[in-house]
Length: 384
Image (cartoon, rainbow, N blue to C red; front, side, top):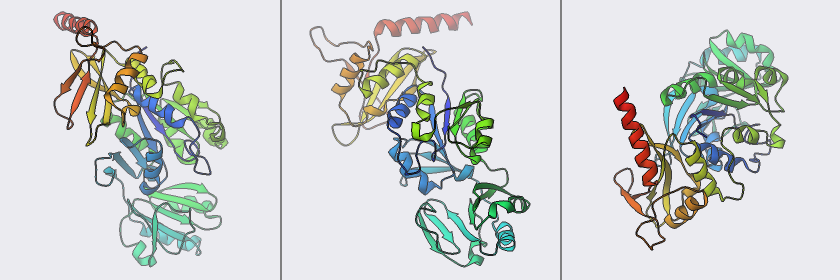
């Protein structure tokens, strides 16, 4: 079975994390298999960056793309970066008009202006859990003085003023009757995701989105395959092509399982990921590993032979922190053929990999498989 690479956009709250901030059992292994199949998992959340990063770490998604603040911010997650991420795209706006309007229609409104990577500047104290990250109380004039990625407005019944606030030239996303998130005009998860999709070269039809909130409506309409969580409001469920189980029933799991081939359930996580990579790759597969400062592996990836060239197919998440011997054993369990080295020796033949790491090695594919693929590529080239 060969899978075409897919962009899998996943909301966080209500999709991957429940109301008690717990990740349903089985979610992380399922995400690991989806990534091992070569798919791009992109977190797409209304959370600020400071609220998204801890969840991304818990999910094992420390490399890849993420959309924060309802699309106002797109980042590239990277453990090697000083902050753990690089900001790729930011959309800002002048918050003064919408804040003034909010004060006119709801004089008791509390205002919070997002500070990317740190927290919020606020007009008054917000309760613990209302905002992600740190907060600092400042004068309203200071909140209106600089451009912002996102503004939070909270007051009793403020949602009924949504149209008036939108008329100031911003995007307003209700998060409940008493809370509104404000971003620049035209900003939403779908727009940010499409920038990422284009950068990755993934066709529009090879996109999947799962969410449960009103702020996911644009994302669900954008996706080639859209799935609403079971507890989502009726407007969200009606906008999606499918509805899965609720977060309490780990509804995202069957969606993730549908994106990967079925593998032997008795395999270890490492062997299952290797088997998944081997079955979804466009050609023969080799495993490449890199060492960190110690004896354990800092990275493990599946590379595939495609059109006569070796290309990176997918990460093997469970290969991080293990040994080369563990990779060999798991590859055998997964049924992956590779050269055995000198006759009479049990240890596989690892080859050195130059570049892209302090010490890289490759567990090669079967020579017969590689020769067959190269011959096929040569014949195709001649035919052209």
